[in-house]
Length: 138
Image (cartoon, rainbow, N blue to C red; front, top):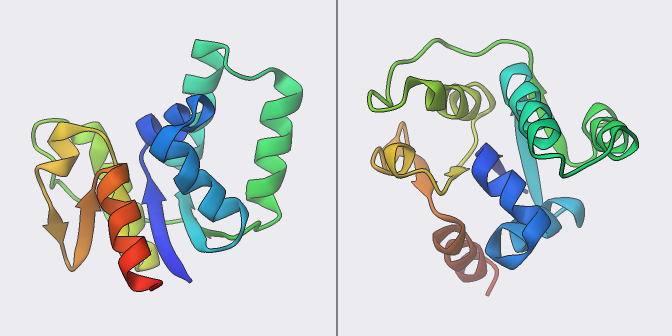
């Protein structure tokens, strides 16, 4: 199972459909493993609440999926890296990927995508990831 880190913008966009939804569906069906750290989960929840995309019951259900290891790999500690100079808040996604040996960071963020590759971790857009995934599964 391919380990991936999903940037907040892709996670939130999945509620609206398109390629981000396809990626989250791959996670829900167990075709990919979602790599998480506390800062990533905190940001997911904070943005969901701020955008009022989910009510508290739905957020609790989502947290339950995460907590019960529903195709999830969680790290309590991550290395401290300074890779994304244009937007240091994005370092948490690469830090999580390094800690959990993920193969991909999936993001729509241009500052994060500019890194392209770090320690053999590919940083790709949702469409690039889906193309890579389909090639691997042919």
